Image 1 (spheres, rainbow, N blue to C red):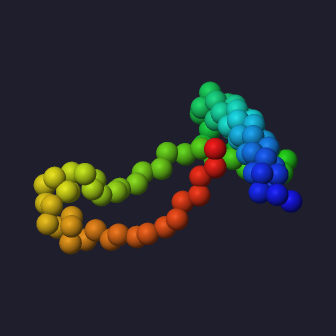
Image 2 (image 1 turned 180 degrees about the horizontal axis):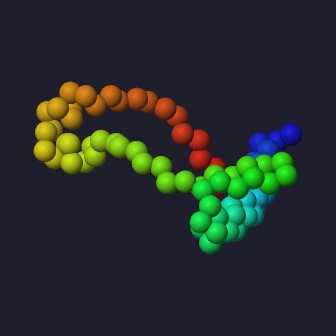
Length: 88
């Protein structure tokens, strides 16, 4: 199989993935709307369970830290290197 054929096949699967993601998002939104309308945090079906709860998390505001204490921000900044694959 040539690289062009591989890329064409990948593009087809990417389109399928996008279509599937849109369907999943729509179904998820329907379940969320039902839960909000009925004031439910959890629902259980015949085979599946869904929860839709508020989650609280705390994170460091790195932009504010860099502005207020740039030396501290620099001292605790860890640089990593990765490779990113993009396909369009």
